[in-house]
Image (cartoon, rainbow, N blue to C red; front, side, top):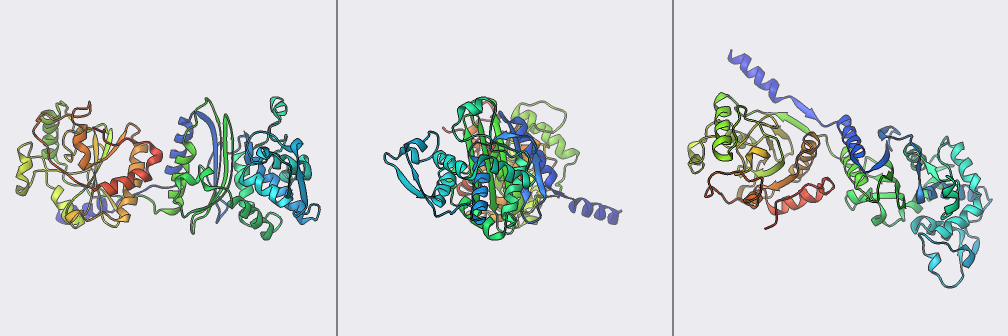
Length: 481
């Protein structure tokens, strides 16, 4: 019997949950479905050419200034064919100047620029005057024919910039997320004409100001991007190559808003995709603490006496996630402290409220491994006044206020994203030290007004970093008093 029990324990302990491609795909689908826009996205693994994530990838969208990438490609192709000399000087006069984006319209006097400089203005300043000059130079139909020759039959240049009459007639510049992503993939692999020409075009895209990229807004500053965005009052697009170390990828995103309000769908998707390519998958290992009849009855009693909640089952509806540190140096010592159903004798200061032992649903080791100690929504005693609505995440360490590890930071972020997706009603992420700020709010439920403890875990700096990494989720912190 003992051997059977030990074997069962090992089997449970070694059960691993991995957050895989399917999970990320569902999260992306949820973001797009909930947006105030009709949106499409295509993500390609630049090392394999595989379409990793795709939603509405074949739907046609107005491109705004993102269509300037195909124009640039046709220009450089004609330059290679000796049809155009990029060093040719072109005068820009008043008749060339038009509104919208760009700087040429603001020049009082005529200027002369090389064709190469006009191309640079078209991409880096999204200059509409420079773009229209280049369209005349290469031929509008030639741009569309080039795309068709590459198999991109839905990518079409059908009007000049700021041609409102053409737009009213339905002659828009269009593409699809899939075709845009595959165009960038051709450039990345050096297969548009040849590697030298492809790289020259990419170098122009790299000169765009990073602040103009919605994709880059969710990436670490050291990650290089080559991109071209586009925007109209009701349209936002972006074609981007992301040089994420050993995991480069391409993302093409397009949306048409249903109202006047811009959302943050692309920023959220960008963060998910970057984490997918650069971080190890989230692994949740079941390492259950005792959750026997005694612990369940004590939990039900605690919910009634401390929170004023009468129930027959010790489970919660999560509204928040509370991060802790154990102030204990090792995983096993931390687990052993929470494992018994009854508070150990050393913690009699808490026993006046209840003999139910403290615990948290999750425990994260210093190496970033996530252990599930209780079912996600099982009641756990870990934060005064809020246990009934809070999932607790303990982190091994914090002895003498020692900071938690980088691996724990990453694991906390991944776990929070997983839980927020699984339980959409989660609104808050707080550090344990912030719990008393909820006193007096509708969420606060503690029968004894004198039952409070002072906490400092998991550290203010750790929480600042967590919140910065999760900013795209728009989770709330503790109330400000």
